[in-house]
Image (cartoon, rainbow, N blue to C red; front, side, top):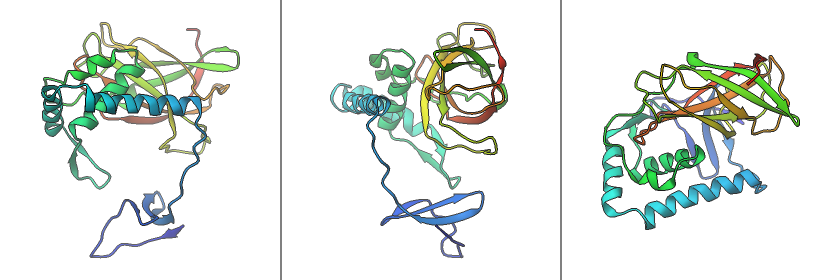
Length: 242
């Protein structure tokens, strides 16, 4: 790995070009050789690829031209900020795939993803201050975490909170960018809080109180609006009986 200092011509680079990766961490910008990750084709990997392929196939071959037009219209109205702080827009297909995967992971019907949001605003993300995690019941060596959270301001019945849990990390680490595995979801019913989410650790670890746990979550509203991703490294709290 080589460090790099940018000048007046180029101020930032991100991504890969010709086998070279340009990136940044807390030590500054750096360059490294691009490597091809191994593909063990685990059950979870195969399931994730199958789900993604199904979403793309449905967009291409099943959605009507009118349904795709509605998703394109929604996507063109909802900006996001890239790694350089620039405003960008996803395509209609990208927004649709986000919704399709979130719906299926949370037990919803794939067919429901065909309906593009009629309200041209993004769903509101839940702040990291609203997320707490406690140790849950341990069965067969797998820890079940209990996630408690306060809902965002615009929640309604049928909205969902989707939780992903990150792989093993050390206690000294203060940032985690993957890999992630989908863990569980909770459905908003009434009141100001989502119900507790009982999430079996997808990494099959036996976690104890005080262990660091990386979380990744987003909100999927009943009208198919989906929030930006939020991340947090939490310290697993005391044992809680579900």
